[in-house]
Length: 451
Image 1 (cartoon, rainbow, N blue to C red):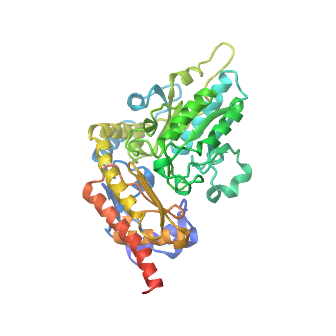
Image 2: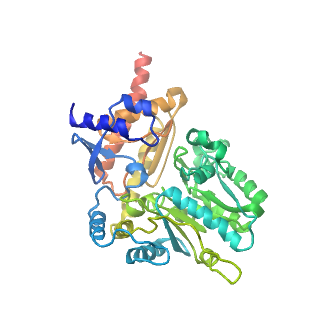
């Protein structure tokens, strides 16, 4: 038994993989990654895989970035953990100032959590207590988009219910009011991007106007519903939503866990719509994907509603052991410096052009139902007639054998490369991606229907 197979055997014996079919995993030879550098993952046999999904959409600045690694090493020798309840530490103070400086508009207060779901849970709690503190406890409902994904805690699953993920726990969820998803791959109104009039917004408008008196907040993933199948939708939807929330006295929470920190071509997706939310959830790219850390960034107005008075203790009784962890804070400070110093957004502009051109071209491949791209986000859907999810899985296996790691979302395939990917590396990713499509779609059709 070679070294890699030994690792696989021990893995199957002890490790429980997330979002992974156990039976399928045990039957195949899956990669065992040992190290990584730049845009490459390196397995136990030394094979280099291009990381086409930024390791779950978070390694924006590439693997093992020397500035981030250096910051982690330095901080780990000084202060590893420090409570942030009733006291502080220098790292979290520096990071909070940096986040406030780059956040949209008047967002200047930062509450820290560990992962994206914890950030969303905190945002929900803040919105509910905000209205309680203001004497409107009846405002306790949440509105979200159908197919929205905001994390896997039971609270978050109630916000973003996806049957395939959450059916087994549906009976214990506190479900939000859901509005129609702006699902451009399957537009119910038969619109093309160039003539879209956002008819799908009518559903959200109805939900907010009917339930405004009892609704605390609306939460959406701006411009892209990730886990729903990379549903990229027009920024104008978010702009309309901001106006509607203002008119109905409802808070707007933007979940930018996946799309923040340059992924869309702007530092934050809200900038594409030219709006400022009441709260913004951030994570993933906050530390460049190096360590788990997330946050809720909110306005001074919301923060002030938590100041106690003689009648009421308004303390926010919500927290985590690693809230504002010093080592994660050091990594995040280094990451923000890299985003600003190295013109990462300029590189995203170059990558965006390459992705847009390629994914537009892929629409002509038989079996591709539709494709889309925005910033460093791109996706296409395999038609049901061409095998849908099964074919998508085979395409990812072909791509991996050729040196590109990607994962399907059902019948949807996507490329979310690190934002620092170079031109030659991006060309290689796109070439492998296209070759895998052709091998499993075009060549398969030729074999099934020979001339």
